[in-house]
Image (tube, rainbow, N blue to C red):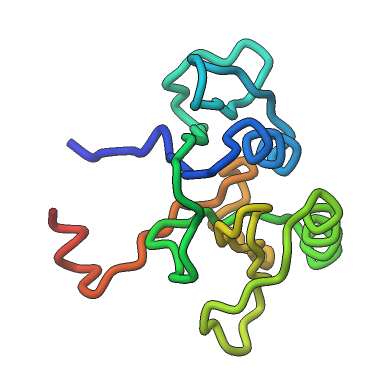
Length: 150
């Protein structure tokens, strides 16, 4: 049986502020399980776990993010080159900043949320046309084949 992620956690000093950023970024809403956890999820009759949405939980932590690149990050989908440019600009207006993580010259835009958590705004790709705003959850690891087998 194949596994399918339904939720990803993002660590933040201020879960509420970072949760609001991600809600605006994805066009979703926020809720809370209580202090220290902000849930970001689609609206409109959403029932967790949704078969098509990967939800985001922003969890409060006591220490700020280190300068090290996150091992897990989100890739956001776009539908055209104009949409990619508009989304990157809108996210920067919301508080995202350009990020350098050793990506070199690539067709996607690498940004960081207001607390420095990296993510990518992908160029349009047919494979992600029907994914919703989150195209994929990326795990950075030394041996991807071993991680996939696990």
